[in-house]
Length: 309
Image (cartoon, rainbow, N blue to C red; front, side):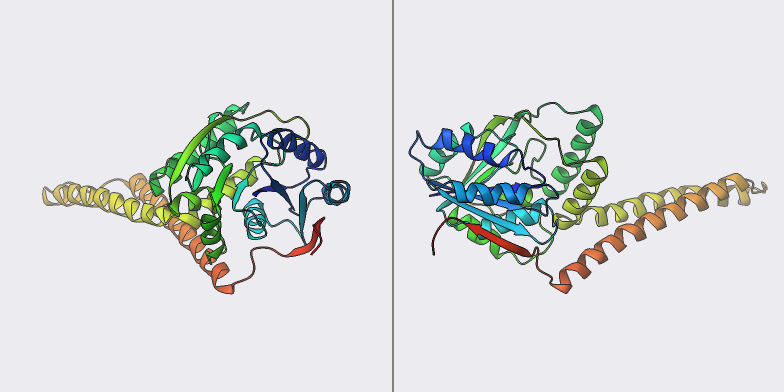
């Protein structure tokens, strides 16, 4: 059986539409499946739509997990995979920007023995210039720091049961699904897809939330920002040696040492670098603090199921 995990935040208009689209693709192929909707603290009628669909549909397994509040997409993906019962699982967006038609190709590749089928974007869909530029910067940073090409990556992935088991065993609280699924290894293959336009609703990602997500993802998966501090420190030390040598040579030759403006600029630059460095270190300390507390990744308030135990 194929378990399909659908994180949902304010997606009331897409709950039934997602079921109908997926069902129309998988039933003709005789692929049995279950849908696991994860209501990530939605403020609209998403939970009621999931509950209604579960009561209405009897031809497949419909499970709904409802969080006590909004915990974020990464937590929703983890909870969905942890409750999945299938031999193979796939994560996809509830707004159907990940085309269900690609599921058939991915499923057949899994039958051929591939354990991770990674959906990569051939066409990213309509994006603003600002969003596209930010995405390029974010993926360039994380690709360089991890050695994994991330620009075309997505959360649209199909995982074999043993891969899912290893993923949910990871003890860290701050997780980055796109990168960790590649870090796990196993036999993998990529499948290209075109990002579909939303039929209804609007994106839940604003620029501040994207920045927060990017910073959290980078710091949860790599220590590259900490290494950047060392590189900046070494570069500034080299600059200080050159400037110090120049000053000593002028003093030795009897020239008056000038440059009040230069001194002020140097103080401002070093002060800024120190404050930035302390900020990066402080952020990592905060992440360590969160990990040490050991709080659960999410709290499930309600489980909806049309399957009798």
